[in-house]
Length: 372
Image (cartoon, rainbow, N blue to C red):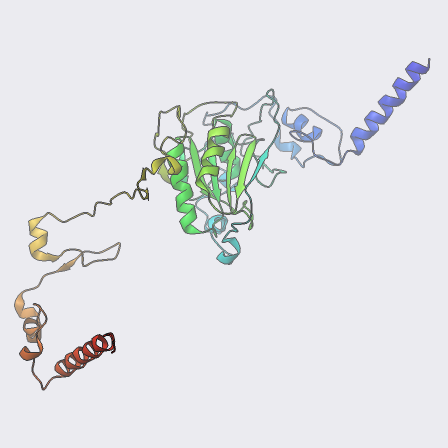
């Protein structure tokens, strides 16, 4: 009798505790999960807001299939990010003082790892419904059915690149105001580590740590770039998504540079060309790779143009004109060895400047002589 009474009281307290729970649910609140599955549930105060009229799917939307009624990576993009609407371009622009994002060498890098159950299957939501995340930088959760092609972008919304992380990719995020030199170095390291990567600016990284790497269930945030930390994170957490595939997605808006195969298409070796492994040690430290400067070999251009005179990205070198197009004094300029004092005209300023310079040199030498 008392045993059943205690059990009933326990159940009452358990139900009441679930209704009063104000913390986080995994992966979402009960209402959101049920609505995504097409069920009808009672209202829960702390559930994520979901538009019930737009949630009509009773099963998981298949990935990688272009469907104009769901997601074809072409229509309805504005709900996440419209790549061709100038008002949306502020997400990849620096609108704050860059000094606020310069980084701090005394601030440690932070790794956040979520314990995502192996049985968890993320939902694919069509473009008729928005996707919001509880985490500032999401590392798991609902995303779009079509994922981006691997490579570097001007911008990719998290609703897209999160799907890439589910396939084992590494997402490199940097704040638009972050140090450009370190941004370029981060890009190089990621590109040299693996084929499956997505690089994009983002407003998600903080001022204290303007850089972040994201994989399925794990994030690395850091203030100042350290090659070994980045490579170690990639080697440990890359290729850990539940849906392993190297297949490119259909989303390619604002793609700047497609990814290139590093080791194999399956990324069998991670960071084989990484920055810390690329430098060879010599007797006096790391050896410096010699850069080959391009030299013009076209004889026609060498005869008709001043090769290398154009330092701009656009335009062409200065074209050599006939002799009559140049002033007469140009042909009288002395371009040989410097004239001696005896060869110079005493009636010119150049003569007296040279004489004064020689006198100063002589006096300096005399001042250094040993005094007796």
